[in-house]
Length: 138
Image (tube, rainbow, N blue to C red; front, top):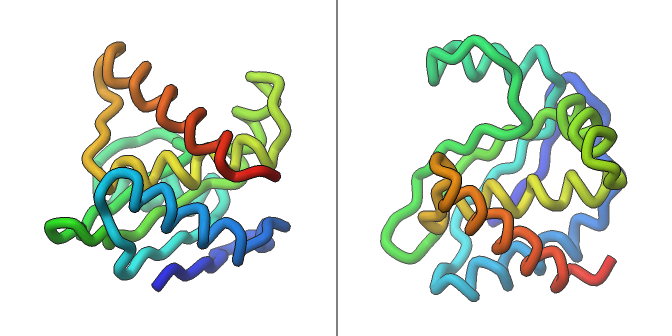
């Protein structure tokens, strides 16, 4: 089951039913089904607190993914800072919704095993994000 909640920020105006189907379809393309997947939309202060507490990182980020995937079923908690998403969208010249959808699928891709720590894996991640975004049909 996919849930969308907000913590200390308004819920973003997205088509949750459409996004849920898109997430499931994207997971299936990588050989996964969706188990318990929780998207938590938050502000910069909340994601900073999560980053400090669980990862011992003292910086803001757009997304933090906690992976509880088992075999071929994705399970996890995905924190998304709407503040940072807005800043990133402005910096790259994208709409807020485009950037938000990119980050939503970015978290899912981590749960399917995609990494982004090296220039090569980051380029692969970006290509997979863009491929998934083409299937959303906003």
